[in-house]
Each structure stands twice: as C-alpha cells, then as structure tokens.
Amino acid sequence: MSPNTGQVQTILGELDERLGIEFVRVSADHAVATMPVAGNRQITGSMHGGAYCTLAETLASLAACEHAGDGRTAVGLDISATHTGRTAAGRVTATCSAIRLGKTVAVYAVEIDDEAGQRVSTARVTTILRDA
Image (cartoon, rainbow, N blue to C red; front, side, top):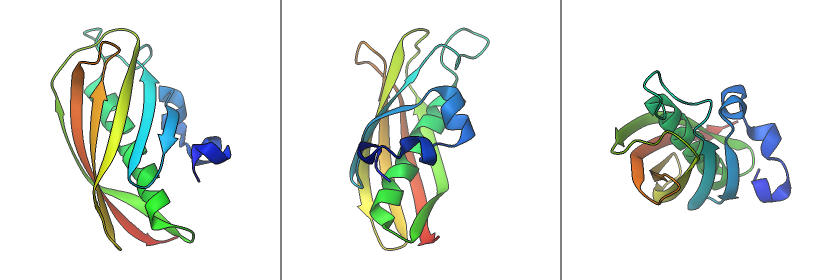
C-alpha cells in the first residue's frame, strides 16, 4: 500500500486527488506529503483550514493502514487541528509522526509547514484499526 510500491493512485480518494496531494514517504510511524495551495484556498485567498484537515487525515490514515497490515484497514475516528499561520501560494508539506501504534487504535501528530518552513497547522488524528 506504500507509494514506494507504485500503488498510491489506487489508495487516493476522489477528494485527495482533487486537492492534489502527493506522497513523499509513507510508513507506519512516519509519513510526508505535499499539497498545492492553488485550488485549495478559501474566499480570503489563503489556504482553507478544511484542506489542512483533509491533508492531515489522509496522511495519518494511510500511515495507519500501513501499521494495520494486510487484511486490515484504518478509519478516521477523531481529528483536532489548530491553524497557526497563513499561506496563499506555493505548496504545503505535512509531516506525520506516530504517537501511539496499538492493535485497535493508531494516533498521529501531523505538522503542516509552508514553503518557508513556517508552521501553518498542527493536527492530531486518531484512527481505529479493523478487519477490512
């Protein structure tokens, strides 16, 4: 299921594709993805907070699927995000780190930075793991 195996397009959902999410690295404990700001702005011209949340949940869910293993899947259970910066151009990069990798629950911290390396959003994503 890792993008390194060339299967990313079969994993992405329709919204993820529309937002332009691209994976750099995905493993159970660490994942990185980027997303363009263009096409994902709110009416004020800056990146939409919902786009940050979608990026965070997509990345954490994919990492959780890696952790769950064959025959199992991950489903988002909870997300909490704090948007601390503003960006209106370029790409953002999300870095996802495991907080807890259990048998039934995986929890991740996702930090999203703009191209200048400034933090624009931080999310905590909890996923539930279950049989596919």
